[in-house]
Every structure is written in structure tokens, then in C-alpha cells.
Image (cartoon, rainbow, N blue to C red; front, side):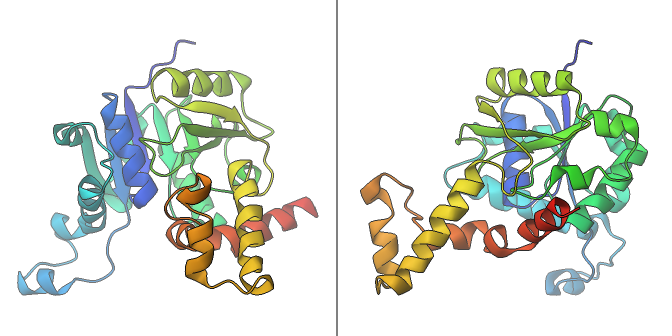
Length: 276
């Protein structure tokens, strides 16, 4: 099968989702970026007399997220004009549109139950053969396919981008027991040829490869704050650029990435799966 990726749907417009959407726009893909509908009006919308049914309100979260991404430094987009390749929407109104897309990437909150709910809907709307992947940082990809159709399972795996998606080369590909090897081969070649990534095949272990190592490193350093009587600024000073690491060092990295990546539900879910 000759597979071409011309249209990509990104489900979730947070820091990673918006960044991934921008990077696909960078290489000329047509992108659909969607997120949830707000549950209540903000003050500006109330003053304007808008309602929760107005499109500008329903797409507020996704539009605000994309706008913030486009203003961020370093820029996620090659040229600001490339952002025109991104169409925004919301789950309630626009998820059915994924039937016309070649690759659907889930980038919602790191909770297995929410991801499973999203994939149930995706399974109903996607066309057979469409690749569906998750950008999870460490939740079990095997658990995500429970209850899904055979075709969904065959074309599903993890594709973990790293932040910021435009600049970091590492690209983890995490298969499930049902993933078609041809899908893995395609994603590996595509990531290297078009996305400028270095694809690495990872096992479905807690936090996969990079975050598994990173979690150990960060937790060990956090313990040293107490063991070696360091202050937080002192530890970040010692574990940043001075040893060739990012300026965010240890505590700032944990804060930016989210502490749930280290002590949250992903580890507990893997423990439950391993005990089955």
C-alpha cells in the first residue's frame, strides 16, 4: 500500500498539540487542530453578549492555544503565513471531519480514561486504514486499544514527540501487540524523511525510553536536595547548562513538563497492567 500524509488531525491544542500542528504545517500538511468546548463564558464574551453556542466561543480554547504557540520563543513555525494551513475546531462540532484525514494524533490530557473516550469516538469516525497515534509521555499504549476495532488496533501505536516538536529530533515509536509492522516502518521512514526526526522504536514500558531515564535522573536529583542539603536554585544551577543540559535544569523542567509525568497516573496504570 502506497501511503501519503497530506492531511493530519491533531486532537488537543496544548503546548505539545499546538507545537505538533505547527510542525506539520511547516512541511506543507493540511492540519485540523481541535480541543474541547468551553463550559462557561469568560468576562470578555459576556460583555460582548455572546453565548456558549457562538462559534467564536466554542473554538476559544483551541484558538487561544494556537495563538499563544505562534507567539512563543523559539517559534514553532517556519513562517507565520504557514499557520494558514491549520484549521481550528472543537471535539463536539468537528471530530467527524477526521474521516478525511490521513493521520490522527491524540494529544489530550495524560489520563487513560479520557484518552480511551477520545479513541472510542475516533474509531467511529475514522476511515479504514487511517493511522491513529498517541503522543502520550508514558501511559500504556496497550491499554488504549482495549475495546477498539481490529482495523483501529492494526493502525494504532504511540508516536511521542518531544518539546518543542519543531526542534527536538527524538521521536519514539511505541507499538502495541496488534500494530501492523508496516505501519511502524512507514512512520519511521516518514519521521526521518519529512519531519526531520530520529525515530527510535520503544517498548511499552512505563515512560518508554527517554522519560524513563529522565524520570530516574530527576527523582535522583530531587532526593539530593534533601540528602546533600541543596537549595532548589543551587541544584538547578548545577544541573543546567554548566553540565551541558537545558537552561530549565531540574526543577524548572519538572515544573514545565508537569509533575504528573513523574508521580501521576501513568505509572500506576502500568503497574496495574503489569499485574494482570
